[in-house]
Image (cartoon, helix red, strand yellow):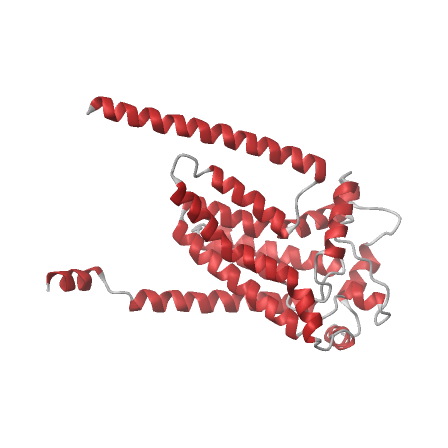
Length: 320
Protein backbone atom coordinates (compact mmCIF):
# COMPACT_ATOMS: atom_id res chain seq x y z
CA UNK A 1 0.00 0.00 0.00
CA UNK A 2 2.81 2.40 0.92
CA UNK A 3 4.51 1.64 -2.39
CA UNK A 4 1.31 2.37 -4.30
CA UNK A 5 0.89 5.66 -2.46
CA UNK A 6 4.49 6.62 -3.25
CA UNK A 7 3.92 5.71 -6.88
CA UNK A 8 0.84 7.91 -7.02
CA UNK A 9 2.75 10.78 -5.50
CA UNK A 10 5.57 10.36 -8.01
CA UNK A 11 3.09 10.36 -10.88
CA UNK A 12 1.32 13.45 -9.56
CA UNK A 13 4.61 15.26 -9.06
CA UNK A 14 5.73 14.33 -12.56
CA UNK A 15 2.54 15.73 -14.14
CA UNK A 16 2.86 18.82 -11.95
CA UNK A 17 6.38 19.43 -13.28
CA UNK A 18 5.17 18.92 -16.84
CA UNK A 19 2.38 21.46 -16.31
CA UNK A 20 4.81 23.96 -14.84
CA UNK A 21 7.24 23.56 -17.73
CA UNK A 22 4.44 23.83 -20.27
CA UNK A 23 3.07 26.87 -18.43
CA UNK A 24 6.49 28.52 -18.39
CA UNK A 25 6.91 27.91 -22.12
CA UNK A 26 3.40 29.25 -22.73
CA UNK A 27 4.08 32.38 -20.67
CA UNK A 28 7.40 32.97 -22.46
CA UNK A 29 5.72 32.58 -25.83
CA UNK A 30 3.00 35.01 -24.77
CA UNK A 31 5.61 37.58 -23.71
CA UNK A 32 7.36 37.25 -27.06
CA UNK A 33 4.01 37.67 -28.84
CA UNK A 34 3.15 40.82 -26.88
CA UNK A 35 6.60 42.32 -27.40
CA UNK A 36 6.52 41.56 -31.12
CA UNK A 37 2.89 42.39 -31.95
CA UNK A 38 1.50 44.19 -28.91
CA UNK A 39 -1.41 43.31 -26.66
CA UNK A 40 -3.79 41.01 -28.60
CA UNK A 41 -7.16 42.68 -29.09
CA UNK A 42 -8.68 40.37 -31.68
CA UNK A 43 -11.55 38.58 -29.96
CA UNK A 44 -10.97 35.12 -31.38
CA UNK A 45 -7.20 35.41 -31.05
CA UNK A 46 -7.55 36.38 -27.41
CA UNK A 47 -9.98 33.55 -26.74
CA UNK A 48 -7.60 31.07 -28.37
CA UNK A 49 -4.76 32.25 -26.14
CA UNK A 50 -6.88 31.86 -23.01
CA UNK A 51 -8.25 28.43 -23.96
CA UNK A 52 -4.74 27.16 -24.71
CA UNK A 53 -3.61 28.43 -21.30
CA UNK A 54 -6.50 26.68 -19.58
CA UNK A 55 -5.83 23.51 -21.56
CA UNK A 56 -2.29 23.48 -20.16
CA UNK A 57 -3.77 23.40 -16.65
CA UNK A 58 -5.55 20.13 -17.55
CA UNK A 59 -2.38 18.23 -18.50
CA UNK A 60 -2.28 15.02 -16.49
CA UNK A 61 -5.93 15.27 -15.40
CA UNK A 62 -7.37 13.24 -18.27
CA UNK A 63 -9.16 14.08 -21.49
CA UNK A 64 -12.47 14.72 -19.72
CA UNK A 65 -11.12 17.85 -18.07
CA UNK A 66 -9.77 19.05 -21.41
CA UNK A 67 -13.16 18.41 -22.97
CA UNK A 68 -14.75 20.44 -20.19
CA UNK A 69 -12.54 23.41 -21.09
CA UNK A 70 -13.66 23.23 -24.71
CA UNK A 71 -17.35 22.80 -23.88
CA UNK A 72 -17.35 25.46 -21.16
CA UNK A 73 -15.79 28.10 -23.40
CA UNK A 74 -17.70 27.24 -26.56
CA UNK A 75 -20.75 29.49 -25.83
CA UNK A 76 -18.51 32.49 -25.12
CA UNK A 77 -16.56 31.89 -28.32
CA UNK A 78 -19.75 31.56 -30.37
CA UNK A 79 -21.02 34.89 -29.01
CA UNK A 80 -17.79 36.55 -30.12
CA UNK A 81 -18.14 35.02 -33.58
CA UNK A 82 -21.72 36.28 -33.83
CA UNK A 83 -20.49 39.73 -32.77
CA UNK A 84 -18.12 39.74 -35.73
CA UNK A 85 -21.10 38.90 -37.96
CA UNK A 86 -23.33 41.61 -36.49
CA UNK A 87 -22.15 44.15 -39.06
CA UNK A 88 -23.37 41.89 -41.86
CA UNK A 89 -26.63 41.18 -40.03
CA UNK A 90 -27.31 44.88 -39.56
CA UNK A 91 -26.64 45.50 -43.24
CA UNK A 92 -28.91 42.61 -44.29
CA UNK A 93 -31.82 43.76 -42.12
CA UNK A 94 -31.19 47.36 -43.22
CA UNK A 95 -32.61 49.16 -40.22
CA UNK A 96 -32.35 52.98 -40.37
CA UNK A 97 -29.10 54.38 -39.02
CA UNK A 98 -29.48 56.59 -35.95
CA UNK A 99 -27.00 59.39 -36.38
CA UNK A 100 -28.36 62.94 -36.41
CA UNK A 101 -31.10 62.13 -33.89
CA UNK A 102 -28.64 60.82 -31.29
CA UNK A 103 -26.31 63.77 -31.82
CA UNK A 104 -29.23 66.17 -31.39
CA UNK A 105 -30.40 64.38 -28.24
CA UNK A 106 -26.88 64.55 -26.76
CA UNK A 107 -26.62 68.22 -27.65
CA UNK A 108 -29.99 68.99 -26.05
CA UNK A 109 -29.22 66.94 -22.94
CA UNK A 110 -26.05 68.94 -22.22
CA UNK A 111 -27.41 72.38 -22.95
CA UNK A 112 -26.08 72.84 -26.44
CA UNK A 113 -22.75 71.09 -25.87
CA UNK A 114 -21.69 67.60 -26.95
CA UNK A 115 -19.30 66.25 -24.27
CA UNK A 116 -16.98 64.63 -26.81
CA UNK A 117 -16.47 67.97 -28.56
CA UNK A 118 -15.93 69.77 -25.25
CA UNK A 119 -13.36 67.26 -24.03
CA UNK A 120 -11.41 67.24 -27.27
CA UNK A 121 -11.48 71.05 -27.45
CA UNK A 122 -9.95 71.24 -23.97
CA UNK A 123 -7.58 68.25 -23.85
CA UNK A 124 -6.77 67.04 -27.37
CA UNK A 125 -3.65 68.53 -28.96
CA UNK A 126 -3.17 67.35 -32.56
CA UNK A 127 0.57 68.14 -32.51
CA UNK A 128 1.32 66.43 -29.19
CA UNK A 129 0.45 63.20 -27.38
CA UNK A 130 0.02 63.61 -23.62
CA UNK A 131 0.35 61.18 -20.74
CA UNK A 132 -3.41 61.11 -20.30
CA UNK A 133 -3.75 60.01 -23.93
CA UNK A 134 -1.62 56.98 -23.02
CA UNK A 135 -3.73 56.36 -19.92
CA UNK A 136 -6.89 56.61 -22.02
CA UNK A 137 -5.54 54.06 -24.50
CA UNK A 138 -4.64 51.63 -21.70
CA UNK A 139 -8.09 51.93 -20.15
CA UNK A 140 -9.69 51.42 -23.57
CA UNK A 141 -7.51 48.37 -24.29
CA UNK A 142 -8.38 46.83 -20.92
CA UNK A 143 -11.85 46.16 -22.35
CA UNK A 144 -10.40 43.42 -24.53
CA UNK A 145 -8.64 41.77 -21.58
CA UNK A 146 -10.69 42.27 -18.42
CA UNK A 147 -13.73 40.13 -19.23
CA UNK A 148 -11.99 37.01 -20.64
CA UNK A 149 -9.09 37.14 -18.16
CA UNK A 150 -11.48 37.38 -15.20
CA UNK A 151 -13.46 34.49 -16.68
CA UNK A 152 -10.29 32.40 -16.94
CA UNK A 153 -9.31 33.13 -13.32
CA UNK A 154 -12.79 32.23 -12.07
CA UNK A 155 -12.81 29.01 -14.10
CA UNK A 156 -9.57 27.94 -12.43
CA UNK A 157 -10.66 28.91 -8.91
CA UNK A 158 -14.38 28.22 -8.67
CA UNK A 159 -16.40 26.80 -11.55
CA UNK A 160 -19.75 27.60 -9.89
CA UNK A 161 -18.83 31.29 -9.68
CA UNK A 162 -17.53 31.09 -13.25
CA UNK A 163 -20.88 29.73 -14.45
CA UNK A 164 -22.71 32.62 -12.79
CA UNK A 165 -20.32 35.14 -14.32
CA UNK A 166 -20.22 33.69 -17.83
CA UNK A 167 -24.02 33.45 -17.88
CA UNK A 168 -24.17 37.20 -17.35
CA UNK A 169 -21.46 37.80 -19.95
CA UNK A 170 -23.24 35.78 -22.63
CA UNK A 171 -26.65 37.31 -21.80
CA UNK A 172 -25.21 40.84 -21.87
CA UNK A 173 -23.38 40.24 -25.15
CA UNK A 174 -26.51 38.76 -26.74
CA UNK A 175 -28.63 41.72 -25.60
CA UNK A 176 -26.09 44.11 -27.05
CA UNK A 177 -25.91 42.23 -30.35
CA UNK A 178 -29.69 42.28 -30.78
CA UNK A 179 -29.72 46.02 -30.11
CA UNK A 180 -26.93 46.64 -32.60
CA UNK A 181 -28.89 44.89 -35.33
CA UNK A 182 -32.23 46.55 -34.56
CA UNK A 183 -30.88 49.96 -33.54
CA UNK A 184 -27.67 50.75 -35.44
CA UNK A 185 -26.15 53.98 -34.20
CA UNK A 186 -23.18 55.98 -35.42
CA UNK A 187 -20.62 57.04 -32.78
CA UNK A 188 -19.38 60.65 -32.56
CA UNK A 189 -16.35 60.11 -34.81
CA UNK A 190 -18.58 58.73 -37.57
CA UNK A 191 -21.20 61.47 -37.19
CA UNK A 192 -18.40 64.02 -37.46
CA UNK A 193 -17.05 62.33 -40.59
CA UNK A 194 -20.52 62.58 -42.11
CA UNK A 195 -20.64 66.29 -41.30
CA UNK A 196 -23.43 66.11 -38.71
CA UNK A 197 -21.36 67.50 -35.83
CA UNK A 198 -18.11 69.44 -35.56
CA UNK A 199 -14.88 67.51 -36.28
CA UNK A 200 -14.07 64.66 -33.87
CA UNK A 201 -10.82 62.68 -33.84
CA UNK A 202 -10.82 58.99 -33.00
CA UNK A 203 -8.20 58.86 -30.26
CA UNK A 204 -8.55 55.42 -28.66
CA UNK A 205 -5.28 54.09 -30.13
CA UNK A 206 -3.34 57.35 -30.02
CA UNK A 207 -1.76 56.77 -26.61
CA UNK A 208 0.45 54.00 -27.97
CA UNK A 209 2.56 56.74 -29.57
CA UNK A 210 3.38 58.17 -26.13
CA UNK A 211 4.16 54.62 -24.97
CA UNK A 212 6.47 54.19 -27.98
CA UNK A 213 4.39 51.33 -29.35
CA UNK A 214 3.41 52.62 -32.77
CA UNK A 215 3.01 49.10 -34.20
CA UNK A 216 0.35 48.38 -31.60
CA UNK A 217 -1.46 51.55 -32.61
CA UNK A 218 -1.51 50.32 -36.21
CA UNK A 219 -2.87 46.93 -35.12
CA UNK A 220 -5.65 48.47 -33.05
CA UNK A 221 -6.51 50.90 -35.82
CA UNK A 222 -6.72 48.01 -38.28
CA UNK A 223 -8.89 45.97 -35.90
CA UNK A 224 -11.25 48.91 -35.44
CA UNK A 225 -11.40 49.57 -39.14
CA UNK A 226 -11.75 46.02 -40.47
CA UNK A 227 -13.09 43.85 -37.67
CA UNK A 228 -15.49 45.97 -35.66
CA UNK A 229 -19.03 47.11 -36.36
CA UNK A 230 -18.80 50.92 -36.78
CA UNK A 231 -22.51 51.40 -36.03
CA UNK A 232 -22.56 49.38 -32.80
CA UNK A 233 -22.55 52.31 -30.40
CA UNK A 234 -25.82 51.77 -28.51
CA UNK A 235 -25.39 50.43 -25.88
CA UNK A 236 -21.72 50.82 -25.03
CA UNK A 237 -20.63 47.26 -24.28
CA UNK A 238 -17.25 48.67 -23.21
CA UNK A 239 -18.95 50.31 -20.25
CA UNK A 240 -21.43 47.46 -19.83
CA UNK A 241 -18.70 44.84 -19.45
CA UNK A 242 -16.64 47.15 -17.24
CA UNK A 243 -19.70 47.45 -15.00
CA UNK A 244 -20.18 43.68 -14.99
CA UNK A 245 -16.52 43.08 -14.12
CA UNK A 246 -16.78 45.57 -11.25
CA UNK A 247 -19.98 43.93 -9.97
CA UNK A 248 -18.47 40.45 -10.12
CA UNK A 249 -15.26 41.37 -8.29
CA UNK A 250 -17.09 43.53 -5.74
CA UNK A 251 -19.42 40.63 -5.00
CA UNK A 252 -16.42 38.50 -4.00
CA UNK A 253 -15.01 41.12 -1.62
CA UNK A 254 -16.17 42.10 1.84
CA UNK A 255 -13.99 45.15 2.46
CA UNK A 256 -15.45 48.61 1.97
CA UNK A 257 -12.72 49.34 -0.57
CA UNK A 258 -14.71 47.24 -3.03
CA UNK A 259 -16.75 50.35 -3.84
CA UNK A 260 -13.67 51.80 -5.52
CA UNK A 261 -14.27 49.26 -8.29
CA UNK A 262 -16.98 51.63 -9.53
CA UNK A 263 -14.13 53.83 -10.75
CA UNK A 264 -13.39 51.33 -13.52
CA UNK A 265 -16.63 51.78 -15.51
CA UNK A 266 -16.49 55.52 -14.74
CA UNK A 267 -12.96 55.74 -16.16
CA UNK A 268 -13.96 53.63 -19.15
CA UNK A 269 -16.91 55.92 -19.84
CA UNK A 270 -14.81 59.07 -19.62
CA UNK A 271 -12.25 57.56 -22.00
CA UNK A 272 -14.91 56.51 -24.52
CA UNK A 273 -16.42 59.99 -24.64
CA UNK A 274 -13.04 61.74 -24.89
CA UNK A 275 -11.76 59.43 -27.63
CA UNK A 276 -14.90 59.89 -29.76
CA UNK A 277 -16.06 56.28 -29.47
CA UNK A 278 -19.39 56.87 -27.67
CA UNK A 279 -21.93 59.44 -26.58
CA UNK A 280 -22.87 59.75 -22.92
CA UNK A 281 -26.27 58.32 -23.83
CA UNK A 282 -24.51 55.13 -24.98
CA UNK A 283 -22.77 54.89 -21.60
CA UNK A 284 -26.03 55.26 -19.68
CA UNK A 285 -27.57 52.51 -21.80
CA UNK A 286 -24.53 50.29 -21.25
CA UNK A 287 -24.72 50.58 -17.46
CA UNK A 288 -28.48 49.98 -17.59
CA UNK A 289 -28.02 46.86 -19.71
CA UNK A 290 -25.38 45.47 -17.32
CA UNK A 291 -27.48 46.12 -14.20
CA UNK A 292 -30.62 44.70 -15.82
CA UNK A 293 -28.86 41.53 -16.97
CA UNK A 294 -27.30 41.11 -13.51
CA UNK A 295 -30.66 41.48 -11.75
CA UNK A 296 -32.54 39.20 -14.16
CA UNK A 297 -29.91 36.45 -14.01
CA UNK A 298 -29.78 36.78 -10.22
CA UNK A 299 -33.55 36.30 -10.00
CA UNK A 300 -33.33 33.30 -12.33
CA UNK A 301 -30.58 31.78 -10.18
CA UNK A 302 -32.63 32.28 -7.01
CA UNK A 303 -35.74 30.77 -8.61
CA UNK A 304 -33.72 27.72 -9.64
CA UNK A 305 -32.29 27.42 -6.14
CA UNK A 306 -35.78 27.65 -4.61
CA UNK A 307 -37.13 25.05 -7.03
CA UNK A 308 -34.30 22.60 -6.38
CA UNK A 309 -35.17 19.85 -3.85
CA UNK A 310 -33.54 20.27 -0.47
CA UNK A 311 -31.21 17.56 0.88
CA UNK A 312 -33.87 16.59 3.47
CA UNK A 313 -36.47 16.09 0.74
CA UNK A 314 -34.03 14.07 -1.33
CA UNK A 315 -33.31 11.83 1.68
CA UNK A 316 -37.02 11.36 2.31
CA UNK A 317 -37.56 10.33 -1.31
CA UNK A 318 -34.67 7.91 -1.12
CA UNK A 319 -36.01 6.32 2.08
CA UNK A 320 -39.53 5.99 0.70
